[in-house]
Structure formats: structure tokens, C-alpha cells
Image 1 (cartoon, rainbow, N blue to C red):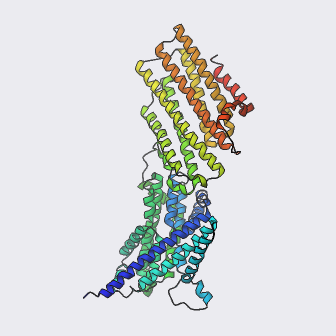
Image 2 (cartoon, rainbow, N blue to C red):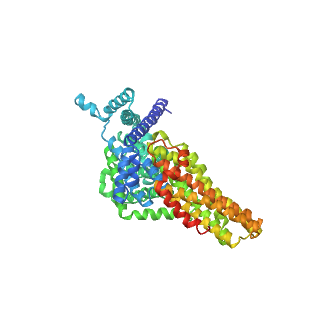
Amino acid sequence: MINWGVVSLNLLSIVKLFGGLGLFIYGMSTMGAALEKLAGEKLERTLEVMTSNIFKAICMGALVTGIIQSSSATSVMVVGFVNAGLMSLKQAVGVIMGANIGTTITSQLLRLDSSGAVSGSLFMQLLKPSMLAYVAVAAGALLMMASKRKKVVTAGEMLLGFGILFIGMSVMEGSVSSLQDSPWFVQLFASLQNPVLGILAGAVVTAVIQSSSASVGILQAVASTGAISYAAAIPIILGQNIGTCVTALLSSLGGNKNAKRAAMVHFYFNLIGSVVFIAGVYLCRPLFGSLWTAAVDKAAIANFHTLFNVAVTILFIPFHGLLITLAEKTIRTAGPVIGEDLDLLDERFYSSPAVALEQCNKVVGSMGIYALINIQMVCAGILERKPFHVENFNENEDYIDRCEARLNTYMIGIKEDELSDQGRRFYAEMMHAIGDFERLGDYAQNLLDQYDLMVQKHVSFSPDAQNELQIMRQATEEIVGLTNDAYAAADNAASPRIEALEDVIDTLKETLKSKHISRLQSGQCTVATGIPFLDIIHNFEKISDHCANIAVYITMYNDTSGIFDIHEYRKISSEVGGEQFAYWQKYYEELYLTPIL
């Protein structure tokens, strides 16, 4: 006969268990987020640069995970860095290994508490984590309400999260203590002594709640009842380490192949480590004697969790290249793909606006590179009759257009108020430059249209016209190359040179236009060649105009006075450039104008 009183009690205990788990996860995430805010964006910057060797990378992974209290969060961060090209796969391996060590800090904190009776002086009772949790919640709430200073409020959030973490743990312990005499509860953990079932249970629970720290916390709560043995706890802990990989694997789905490989490194590290460890444990099982079936406590769970991750990390240090090889064989390369640079625009970097802005800068620079490739490609077709793959040209132009659309959308999500003064100037410069780089691609497309027209109508230029176009082509390709280099380096010194070359290209256009009209009038050239010639030099001149615009934006970025006026600058550019402008203007006149005149 069903004892409905017992069933009701069990259901209430399970509800209480899930409620305690919710408090535990909320407290852990609140504390981690607050600690990350207190550390500032330097935390991610440090993770990015302090990974020059495997040992530094392991230390950094452990430190960052210890601060943010989540190996899953660190792994997702690493996947983002790899996806964005900020970190190599080799650097990522060490950080991931260190993250597995850092995540054991939560379980070590939880072992400090005991569900036993409270004894001793009032001061000693307050120092117990179960009691200190309420003090921390009260202090955190007081700081959050009494102060408007951002750092003080964040410190309050950290204390609040710390307290709620332990309160959640106490609630879970209280809920499972009432279940310890239930036959189904005892039978459940007896069945988990089967290593396969234990590993599966640990992996599934951790994958569902996406936190190995939380699932280990549940295990420690159960262990406080004495209902779980070493034989059941060890496989569960190993399964928990496998289950925590799910978050990184899900995070990598929208990333490039290296991001997916970074997630696979995390998976293989925990999978192989668990297989090796479980094999070692069962080989040494006779040495454990009666300890194997003895009840495990919170401290033993924390210690085994730490021992496993430290031991597996030490095991893999000399063989970390094997993890990379396995990941590369699992996620095979299909060769370079145009458009992979757009993977740099990862929304995970919104939490660090300066990093997100730097990623945008790389994509903007790539627009200029592909525009120059297209200009060179089509100019070689027009002037040297070199065949080229129009499909490649179209792919490049499509990429430039996609960059403009994606950048404009992505940059809206960057919080300007969290940028420095220089960062805000960088943001403004970039927003201006995006459109000009896209226009370079459009004028390359116009040149392709002229190329198609010439091929269809079998148009060819006279030797003089051919020579003149060749000179203007060289000047145009040079100014685009100079602009790309200046933009990549934020080189303000290059602006007078670009402005001077643009001025010479303007003069070149008018000179070539006059000369070609004279040839048309004298009958040296036909109308069929006249229109393509004039369109080509017009597109060359417009390309140089947009390069000059970008040079102005670079100057704007480097201006620290905050009163830079673009329109006024354009009016007096030759005066602003001074001797440098005059020097380069004379240089380019001799290089490009003199041979024609």
C-alpha cells in the first residue's frame, strides 16, 4: 500500500532540493560576475596575452576560473578568443587545462562547512560558512543599498552571491537529509556504483545544469547524509568533468573551425583523463579495502575533484600536442574561406568594448585588402589582357558588402559610454571609414563593368592611351596600398603623403581627359574607346578621393584636442601637411605627371 505521507514528504524534499540548487547556481553566478567586474576588462586582456607558454597558460586558466567560479565560462571565453584569432589553439590548450583546476575552488570552499551541530563561542559560530553566509548576505545588501559607487555596489553583489551560494548549499543538504532513509534514494546511489552508470549520471546532470561546480555541490550535499560511497562518488565526479564540456561545445557551434577545435580540446582532455583515471582507480581497487564501500564526505569529494584535475593536467603537459592533433583530425580543414574574418565579430566581446572595437578594426582593414586585390585583378585584365576568375572577384566584392552590413550592425552593440576618449575617437573614425572602404569595392566593380564592355566589343586602346592608363593605374594602386597600411597602423604621419598623391591623381585625371579628347578630335582614337577611357580614369580618381577621406579619419583619430573639424581640415589640407605635403606632392608629380607632360 502506498504511504502518501512518505510520498508527499519525498516530493517536498525534492522541490526543496531544486530550490536550493537554484539558490546555489544564482549565488555562484552572482559572485563570479561581481568578481569579474571588480577585476575589469584587464582580466580578459591578461588571459589573451599571458599565454606565451603552456605553464603560464595553465596558471592563467586556473586564476581566471578561480575568479569567475566557472570553468565553462572560461572555456567559452577561450573559444571566443580562438574564434576571433586573438589566441592560437596551442595557447588555448593550456588555459583549458588550467580552467579545470580552477573550477575545483568552489568544492574546496564548500568543504569548509559542516552540517553538524553548531558549538563553541558566538564568534566561532559566526565564522562557520553556514552562519557566515547570512552575515555576507546582510553586508552585501547593505553595501548595495547604502552606496552609489559602482565598485562598492559590485563588492556588495560579490558578498551577496557568496552568501546565497552557501545558503543554497545548506538548503540542498537539508532536503537530502530527509531522503536518506527512503529505500529508492539508497537504491539509486547503490546502482551508481556501476562506473558506467555513475559516469553517465554525472555527465548528464552537469550537461543539463551546465555547471560542474553546481553538480559537485549537489554531490557534496548528498554526501553530507552518508548515503553515497566512494565507489559511487568517483565515477560521478569523472562524469561531471565530461558533462561540463557541453557548454563550450554549444558555444563553438557558430564559430569557425578553430573555435570548434578549442571546444574539442576541452572535451578530449576530460574524456581521456576520465578514462585513464577510472582505469587506474579500478586497477588499484584492491588497495582501497573497506574504504571503497565506505561513506564519502564533502572534504573527500572536494579533494578527489582537485586531485583528478591536477593529475590529468600534469599527465597532459608533455602530450598537449596530442589534444591539438585529435581536435584537428575531428574538425578537418577545408582550406581558407573568404569571409572567415567576419567570425572576429563575436558578441561575446561586448563585455569588453575595447576588445570588440579592435576586432571591428581588423575586419575594416580586411575590406581594404580585398578591395585592393579586386582593383589589381581588374586593372591587369584591362591593361595587360590577363585573364582572371570573375568568380573570385565577385566573392571578394560580396565579402566587402557583407563586412559593411555586419560591422554597422555589430558596432551598434558596443557601448560607447564604456570606452575611453581614445576609444570613442576610434569608434567614430571606424564608422566613417567603413563606408569609404566599401566604396573602394564599388569602384572596382565599376572597373569590372568597363572590362566586360571592352571584352564584348573587342575594344583596345592606342599605345598612348594604354601608357597613360598604366601610369594612373600605378598611382591608384599605390594610394590604396598606402591607405591600407596607414589605417592598420593608425599612422597619422602618412596622411600628408596620401593627400598629396590624391591631389596629383586629380591633376592626372584632368590632364588625361584633355589629352584623350585631343586624340578623339584628331581621329587617333574612336568614340568606342573614348567612353571606356574616361570612365576608367573617373573611377581611378574616385578611388583616390575615398583614400583621402580615410586619411582624414586617421588624422581625426590621432587628434587629442577633441575639436577636430573634418570640413575645415579638407579646406586647408596642404597647409596642415606643411613641408611633408609639399615634399610628397613634388615627388608624385615627378613620378606620375612628368612622364605624361
